[in-house]
Image 1 (cartoon, rainbow, N blue to C red):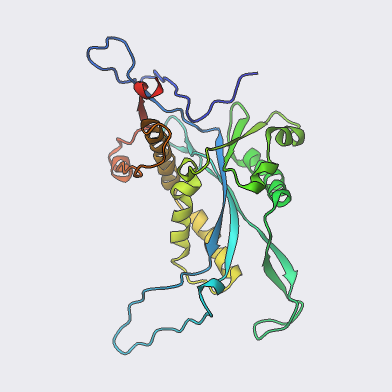
Image 2: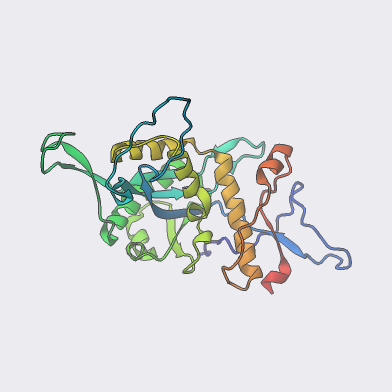
Length: 294
C-alpha cells in the first residue's frame, strides 16, 4: 500500500503553468522545488474563545455616556472551547472554487438544567454548560463529527486523508488503529502529530484562530450563547482567500524550520500575499531550495 504523502515531501510539477526554476551554471540540475499542495491534510485543534474583551475602546460624542459593563473580574468573562477542522481550499483549472477548506467548527457545550433560579432565568431552564474535554470526549467528537464532515465536504480523489494535530493528552485517543476500526468504506484516515513546541506547524494556531477571534470581538457578547453565535458567524465570515493565505504561510514556516535546522526561533514571514493576489502573481506553493534537504 502506498504511503500517505506529507507536507514535507516536495513534488516536482512540470506542467506548462508551473515550470521549476533552474539556476545558471547548474545545467539541468534542479535547485528549487515547490512544496506539495497538501490538499489531503486536515488540521485539527481546540481553542478557548472569550465572549468579550476585558477592555474595549469606544468613541463618544460630546455629552454621550458610555454604556456600563459590569463583571467581578476578567476571570468571570464567559468563555467556551471549540474544536475546528480545516483543509486547504481547492480550485479547478479555471480558478473556480471547488472546496472552501472549512470542514467544521464544534463547541464543547452541553445543555443542562439550571440548578437554581436567578434574576436572569428560573431554575430548571436549560443553560449552556462547558464540557470537560477528556480523551473519550475528544474521540467522540472526531469519530462522530469530524470524520463524517470530511466525507461530506472534502473532495479527495485518493480518499486518503491525514489528520494533523498536536500532542495534547486528549489527542492520544485518536490513532491509526482507532481510525481504521471505524472506517468501513473506501476512505482511509491516518493521524500525524506535529513536533512539540511547534504551534506554527498547525494552520489553526498559525493565524486562523486569531482571525476568527478578531472578527468575533467586533460584536459584543454578554452570555455564552451570544459568544457561540458570534464565533460561528465569524468562522463563516472568514474568507477562502484568508484560509488559503494561511496555508502559504504554513509552507513558508516549514521552509524556515529547515533553514534553522529544526529550531523555532524565527520571525513569521511577511509575503505580501494580498498584493500579489490582486496582481495575479501569487504563487500556488512556496518554493524551497533543494540545498535545505541535503
